[in-house]
Length: 210
Ligand SMILES: C[S@@+](CC[C@H](N)C(=O)[O-])C[C@H]1O[C@@H](n2cnc3c(N)ncnc32)[C@H](O)[C@@H]1O
Image 1 (cartoon, rainbow, N blue to C red):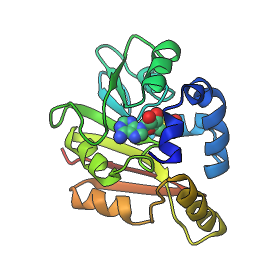
Image 2: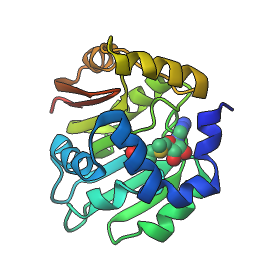
Image 3: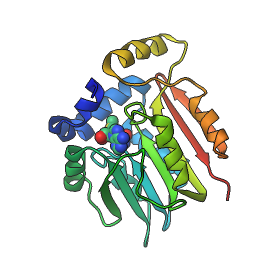
């Protein structure tokens, strides 16, 4: 297991992830605040009403509960993560009436095809050993007409891009090029593909045709 994956399994990281680790590192990586990322996630996924939402690699539930607060009635968000310390933190810090947490592997999701109206995966595809298989799984469990949103690393031909290659290689984080996710989404039949790059992170969203 590489340094990045070991770090994600550490109880000490789970304790500080939401309040200190994520706001600091993601701000350095993208120039964006967690509040802006949360608001944009709601917009990209077109959240609202009684949707069923899946938050892959949810960590301590720092997006999961926020997204669930945008739903009503029987709307639910399920957070999936493989790290026990992260899920223990999620249950303590981010429980709610429309939230549930499941331990699982993003590469083999325990859900039937087309279960969810929206699926997201923020800040994790660069940690997952087979990120494209995990992305295919997300699209598999997405219902026709549903939306998907991911945030992951981006390799640009800029000083930030060159720095990300060095840090990525050293820590075991994978750095994706500009075309990987738009091309995969197109291959999987998704439409309305939108990609935004902020420093060394890319934000990609799309829809499954109804
Ligand atoms: C940096 S945290 C992201 C948390 C949250 N989504 C966010 O954006 O702040 C990455 C999470 O990915 C999880 N993870 C990594 N590989 C995974 C896999 N194969 N299946 C499920 N979760 C995984 C880790 O346990 C960790 O909690």
